[in-house]
Amino acid sequence: MPKISVKGKNMPSSPIRKLVPYAEAAKKRGIEVLHLNIGQPDIKTPKIAMEAVKNANIEVLAYSQTDGSEAYRTKIATYYKTRGIHVNATEIIVTTGGSEALSITLGSILDNNDEIIIPEPFYANYNGFATANGVTVKPIISKIENNFALPPIPEFEKLVNEKTKAILICNPGNPTGYLYTKEEIEQLAALVKKHDLFLIADEVYREFAYDGKEHHSILEIEGLEENAIVVDSVSKRYSMCGARIGCIVSKNKEVMQTAIKFAQARLSPPTLAQIASEAALDTPNSYFEEVISEYVARRNFLVSELQKIEGVKVANPSGAFYCIAELPITDADKFAQWLLEDFNVDGQTVMVAPAAGFYATEGLGKNQIRIAYVLEISKLKIAVAILAKALKAYTH
Picture 1 (spheres, rainbow, N blue to C red):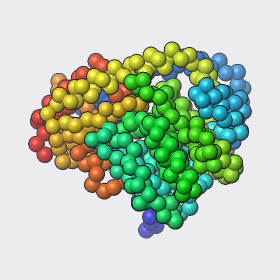
Picture 2 (cartoon, rainbow, N blue to C red; picture 1 turned 90 degrees about the horizontal axis):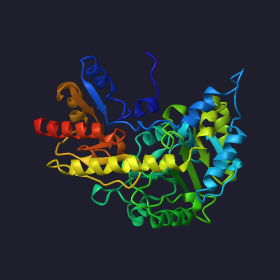
Picture 3 (cartoon, rainbow, N blue to C red; picture 1 turned 60 degrees about the horizontal axis):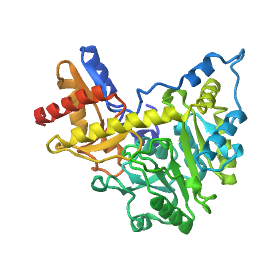
């Protein structure tokens, strides 16, 4: 019998999606499932984006340019300038989602068995992208006790060796919601310059910074032009996850010349989605003010209510729309499955994301879950109440 690849065997399952069959089975039994497991906002996509697609006068849905339409890339550059990031259209490659942007980036700068340092917990698919590219992830632990702040730089230094090629961060963080300070970004910048490494920043949640705090992009740092690579996306910013439009941004010409070859292999990013994304850039700031206000209210409610549950420890996020909660259980995977298979309150239950899948270090996060506060407060209230009752009833 033919065998699949070792790479295929090592490819991790998504901790976010692997429970979907249990959720679907629950729904078939008539159970309403409240989804706190995935970062799919319930915020409406800007009308301007949807209208642009409806009104597109296209007779042939043709390929676009490999690096994305010039009009869209120019408009992205203008968007960045309003945020103090000075790049031009040639320093941007449009991709099929932030996922492809990251995968192309890893393929462009790392070879088989090269190493990349990533603070954990981190977005679970980083493990998958690394596996697909034959790259070894060297995790460095951040802790719930300080809201998953950047680990001390000496801990990074311990991991750097001749195989180390890059450090990857998500800012604000998924799954932690942590927003790196300017000082932390500057520390990382000094570290990668010292060791001649790349610094990759996944900045797809850039707009979602709370409590008067500011997001600090690695592209703002002078002298980091050859080291900095940003991965971006419209998915979360404009609640357009299904558009699958992202981009790579870097001033390093060799990186971009290499990345475009990977982009050519997939031909081009989707045309209609670029039209929607270009239009979305005209979304007024009032949209983000309303969205941020809503997310802050949801976060405040969620964290406050979780803290009332005996035995629960929760980090207080300053960005994105996720938080990590530590539960008084031993195995969050089993608990999450039990919620879907065996527990409900008045015909309702909750779907969460077990946090172990967001760690690369075996055994970490077993008693933690990631909660995405992408539901309105009335539904969050029901979900937290269900979670509290479930923890009382759970005896495994």
